[in-house]
Length: 106
Length: 125
Image 1: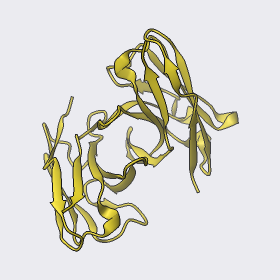
Image 2: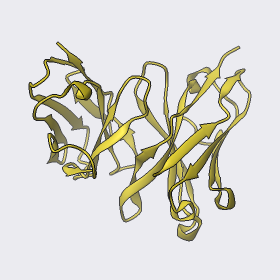
Image 3: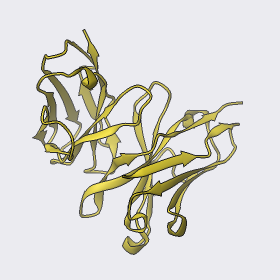
């Protein structure tokens, strides 16, 4: 099973600041990595697929990069609605999710 | 607009059974690959299993923790997805989400393009 490790577990930032979230895979997943956002009491929402492709309707402040084992989700300037938990998911070898990074208001 | 509405959740004793349903609208359901993803209280996401469209063979795949106990099926005439859960364990307690698969290449898709609001299953004596 491919294990995805997300860091940090919690990121405390202020609106307007930039956020950098990391996802590391235990073995190469090529570019088969997605990012999801989940707010309290809501279902997750797909933001990025294949490492760097934004889903239609997702704001341009969200961007993804990486390949192989190291991936990054960047939020260029945090809006109030961006404070949430973010998960990465790989589909290279079945499907696994990372443990999540909580982006909280500082 | 895609709508996925889960139902059938509830409280069940260990060893019991439960069937979840997911009514879909706004999609070409018969062509869709569908998945179930669960989330234990306060925990992260876990893929449960998927079913391909009948035109793609209708095969099912399951995560190791549920293989042999859970069965995914579909009724294209009712645009409804099902999750049959047997021999339930306390560790199966979770919110179960119905999802559509997408952004595929080859035999692999992401199992979370669209999501329902989830159905809570509690396994407890």
